[in-house]
Image (cartoon, rainbow, N blue to C red):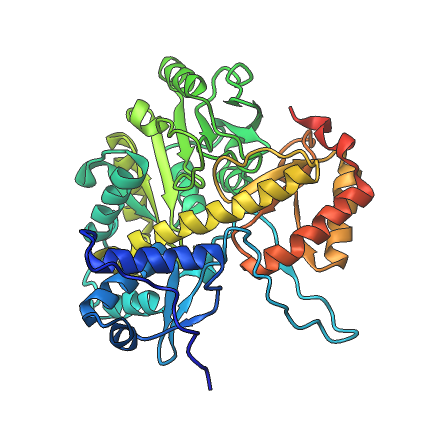
Length: 470
């Protein structure tokens, strides 16, 4: 039987002008932040806490609702309400059982590109699917995507990316980024067209382009983003991820963004802006989206894959009218359209306010994980880059052999790592580890990091890390 947590460390000032619900939320937040309440502690029900504090249940319910929205607590159906956040030191220091002798180590996924799926609130997720199931089956295909979904996307882009779009004229639903690239390759571009792609870069997009008969030309990146001078004359399109370059993690500078769209207009390029990790930013000012700078030549691609789950199969495209028309004509001719199920779920998440609450929890959770990693790597003298946005950072290594050795040694200790070499279309020029911190749990990350630092110390002393900082 699960017992209640000890008496809560709460003091309410009834003489204060601050509402009691706000005071209660602040007290519980502070207790969770300084360790008086620990991750996993069970809280009293709103009714029991109201009796304990001699306040109305409206006060306790409002405080819990606020803390739930911020991600400090979570509710488990039939079980109760629990603290979900560890104190600022980050690791949950309570002892954990050791693995049985001879047991194979469980794999800890430290690869980039996967979301914090474990942080999705289960009641909200079930509520969204129930709501989606209440919608009657469609009588015909919605080639552009469900109108309600496209409206949610437009609101999301305005609130979280600062991009104002016309739902009717420029927003299309997609099955995700790779699916959108494949559609652009088949409907807007033509076989033999030259497309410049960041090097290293997103190889699934490269494969989709090559499958459509496009000629992919690698374009190296520097600390400001994709290098424009290496893009060949006659290129038809440019593919880039300016918000958090995949996999190096750098943000394209404001100057490079302006230069890119100006050059695109002069040269007739179509710029495909993959907004990878665009919703996640730390300690840095927002930079203008390429789509906001030049909506006439930029196709903006986004997806729920990194903020929720790739299994939802829901993404979006914001494009100039000629591109929208070409994509819709291609869908009509091929009888294809993005599946509506994932769109309905996102609509329900947004309608209930659960999407906004999840994004707030996501940003706070990943910000804390990022701080934990940055502090630990810095203390160990390990060089890294790409930590000011997204959900991964990069630890450079001196060679492909060094990368291979580290990945193999980590796998033997139950750590799944991703090397930079495999993200090249041409001969690799960057070597190192793209270290993701969203897919695993907090306890897994806490346990895995010391093991990774030990491996780095054993095989690659700090002096060898910055060999190819570019």
